[in-house]
Each structure stands twice: as structure tokens, then as C-alpha cells.
Image 1 (spheres, rainbow, N blue to C red):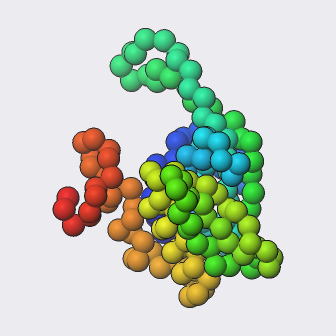
Image 2 (cartoon, rainbow, N blue to C red):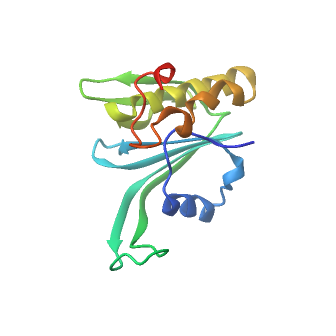
Length: 172
């Protein structure tokens, strides 16, 4: 089954997850946010697998490697991880997005206690909502309904020319 990519995940982050033993083909849904759990700006990546949710926070550093030569990379990127957590579906329930004044957060009940999973700015409000729907769907039905979420895939929600999210998918 193809991964539903709500937001593009950089190659350096994909390599980090592979290093942690998470195979790309095991990922059901992937998304990103632009805030850490302490409220500072940074890179946050969330993966939904069949049995757990994985959240990695850190910063992507980009360095130049010189002039552009056709067919060669002109920059290197590195993902420096500051936090990596994993929650089993047995331990997590009822994730929900909470909208704050200019940001938001996703909270869930983890082992009987309400816990912050990740923060987001208004840019990633839609992604947080899709995450909550997906986890609640898996908890309710015991499986991930690929056909329900395929319309949320990055390729179906952004303009191929400018890479901005469509305000309404029906108006492409």
C-alpha cells in the first residue's frame, strides 16, 4: 500500500527514520509540522504506522556545496534530531486538535493521561486534522482505510506549478 503523504518529507528525514528501523512501506500516513512540543519553531515529522505513531522533532540544516552543475546536487541537508517518541495504538486514544490564538496543538490520552503530541502553526492545521481523523479511524475500525485518505495526499492537494495548497480541492 502506498503511503499517504499529507506533507512532503525531506530525504534526510526519511533516511533518519530508516536508520531508526522504520521502513517506508510500513508507513500509512506521513505529515509534518513547523513547531516543537515546547512551542519553538522547528521541524516536526509525524508518521502513522499500523501499530504506532512516531514523532521526531529537530532541525534541518542546509549547506551549499558549490555552483550548480547539471545533474548534481547543489546543497546538502541534514536532520538533527532533538526528540524522538513513539506511542503504541494500545496506549493512545482520542487525539484531537486544539486551536489556540495563532497556533494549535494535538493532544491525546496516553496511558490514561492527557498528553501533548505535537504543536502546529496555522499552516499545518489541516495536516493535524487529517492525523487525528486517521488515528481515530484506525482505533475505531482496527484498520487504515486507504481510500478514505487518498484525497489528502500531497499530490492531490497542491498545485503542481507553485506547490501551494488548493483552498478547495474541488476548484483545482
